[in-house]
Image (cartoon, rainbow, N blue to C red; front, side, top):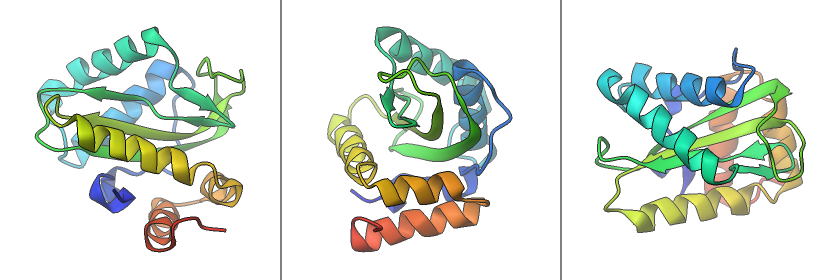
Length: 158
C-alpha cells in the first residue's frame, strides 16, 4: 500500500498550532473534515476513538514519530493525513522524546487488512532517517506531498 492510497493531500499540514496530544489529533481530524474526507458530525466520535486508542498505549513510536489511528464506522475507506510540528509535542512516546511527525489514520472496522498495510508502509518508510529528516524540514504541504510521492515511487527516499 502506498501513501497515495490513503493520504488526503488537501489535509496535509506542514505546521500545527496544537501543543498537546489531543490538540494535534483534533487539528488533524479537522483537516480531514475540511478536505471532505470525514463528516463534521463524526469529528468528535473519531477524536474520542483515537484518544481511547492512545489510552491503551501511546502511538508515539519513537524518533519523533507518532501514528495515531482508529477504526471508525463513519468511513467507508481508509483515510489519513500527515502533519509536522516544528517544536515537537509531548505524546508520551516510547522513547520519551517530543513528536514532530504525525501520520493519522481512520479506517473502516471491516477492512483491517488495509489498516495494517498502511501501518506497515508508514513504519517501513519511517525507518529511513533521511525521509524523516526531510519531512521534519518540509515547509509546505506540497513539500510533504512530494516526499510521500517520492517514497511511493522509489521506496526509501535516501
